[in-house]
Image 1: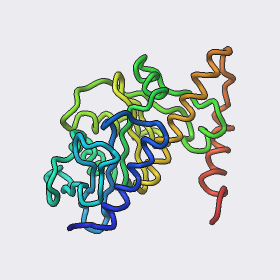
Image 2: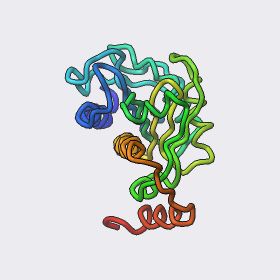
Image 3: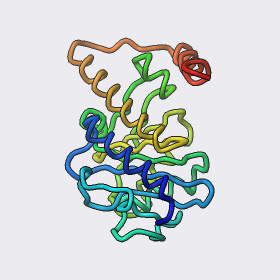
Length: 217
């Protein structure tokens, strides 16, 4: 079995999606790229999360061609691979249809950066890209185009859901969790009134501190 450790990691991380209420039934997927081989481990299509095993993860090349695995890969494989080919620093991609973030996508609206936690993690708004059909590279292209000029590791896809990226698959999962958490906070706040903006200078300061000072170094 190719890439047993990466398959184990991707399988383990998939449990975080239902645990954090980011997916329903079999929707959503995670992939990770192995920098040494440029091979990708990704969820098989249409398999329930509780039935996933390391062996059921599918390994593909960067063109989405299956290299190892007995199951068909995710229907989003081509888009994951497009992101990896065009964003060399990315080694993890997550796709969800999480409830509050997808609500923003359904009205074609970015999630504004109005919480300090969002400034920390995203350094600005979470952009909303356009609409396209599932199955090819088009979604991946929208994600790359949306994030090229943003510090955000997340993008919304109009009428669809959320894609997040990271230096690792775990980083991309964290971004997916934080996307939904902040989307829910912003939505709830808007029921009370207009949200209070944070200046870009303050967002920049918060982001710099979180990315370079916060935590163990």
